[in-house]
Image 1: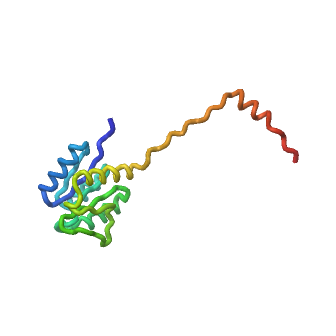
Image 2: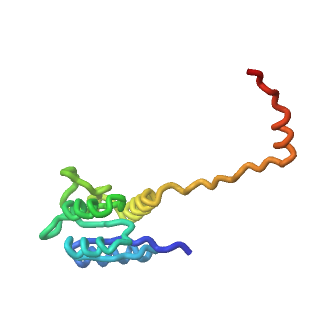
Image 3: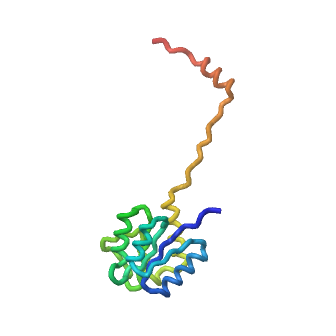
Amino acid sequence: MRPKKTILCVDDNEQALAVRKFLLETRGYRVLVASSSADALDTFRGGGIDLVLSDLLMPQMDGNEMVRHMKDISPEVPMILLSGTVKAFERANRADAFLPKGACGPAELLERIRVMIARKRGPKKATVRPILEPVQDAVFAAHAQPAIAS
């Protein structure tokens, strides 16, 4: 059995956080939650996070600023920002994706998460199988090559 991937969910809205946590846990993810950017940064510094899913608009430090700090710590971890009020987000965005809440359903969110975690892991490594020649053929092939005169 493969280990569960860990997702850090960040939102100052406890109800939205609970819904997202339930959605992800029922799909086999391990979910850590934080209700503020400061708590999320503390959890993230502990390591072991495979993806961060955060609300954009939060008090004290918005999601974009939090992502900037997290990318300085561990740039390879994929991060998704969500917003219910902002429909398009471009300003100095260091997150790997931005999704407007309501514009994408749970299925699209889950697929985006799956793809981003797979991309972080990288493509499956191809196994190289050695080509085994019969010993006799290899020996004869070495003797059959003509000598080159110099």
